[in-house]
Image (tube, rainbow, N blue to C red; front, top):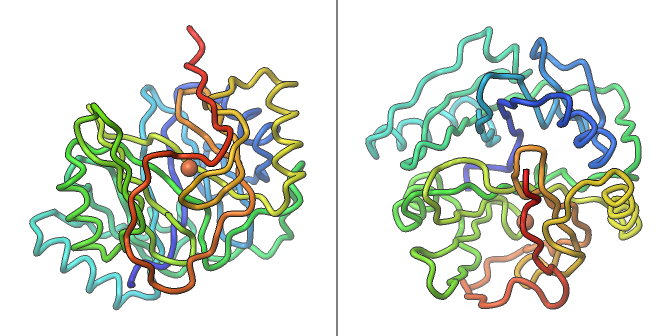
Length: 289
Ligand SMILES: [Fe+2]
């Protein structure tokens, strides 16, 4: 599969004062100077900032960054995307500098979600010192996973699997919902990308995986201590076997802190799930403003 892993997330945010304690103090990411001036930047490993949050008038998903091996694989994939009928734009040297990558292209998925393919991340060898999490699980599994909202999950499925080469891992049908959820992988992480049928495109959810159960338990304590609103209680997922909990981000995204996700080392047949969790993951509605 030509896409290696989820490399980075870039968000435009309206409320930096709320996001900074959320990402740094609650989630435990390492805040760094970064290469995008004025942004909140966070590392979790030797990669350049995995999360870059730029203050803006309006909050929105700015980019989901997918890593590929090299310029040739990026060009091959860009040609496929254009053949499918979606315009691909080459990132300028200045834009590469902001991302600390050697090359990238950008395009919108059929729902309008902004995606990028990049190669040559410029590693940052200053040791990662996460303030409260022992270690994040990345490497060949990338930064974690994202779920994006798509207008038509069948069209999105065809694009991400048929054009970008993601592997379908499992599906989820929720009775009464117009459209199916797809969970897609590109490496041993059970899913790097989820497609959620929705009324408007955008970032629905992201997950980072910590190395130990205590990291998750301590994160849960921090959420309670800091008043971060719970979205789903501690539980274990049926598809990626992640033990995790969810909170609401300052702008309402679902943010998951997990541990013990299963590695999928060989191709397995696609399966369906009707339950998201073996236990736990009880839902709490978002707090009223
Ligand atoms: Fe998740």
